[in-house]
Length: 96
Image: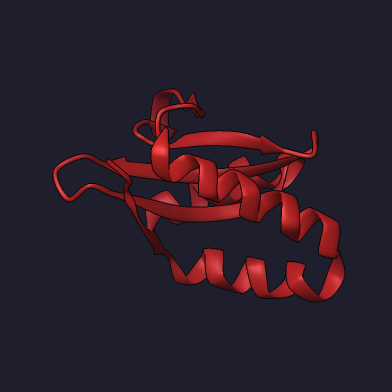
């Protein structure tokens, strides 16, 4: 059964920037998101303070961070960015 997608405001802003900046990266991200709907646990489970989030690699240096909600059968796309910055951003988002 396919999961529904939901987006955070942060994710939407990051994707809007990406659409203007790098079309091939955007297309690869869209492919990864599509695959997630059928196999939501393929990403790496994050540890410690970032549990229960998961992340998948996109073109090596980028990460897509998401959370799976089995009760609602949805995937919440939380953030997208370069691996050097995304985990710092996630720590800030977690505190909000």
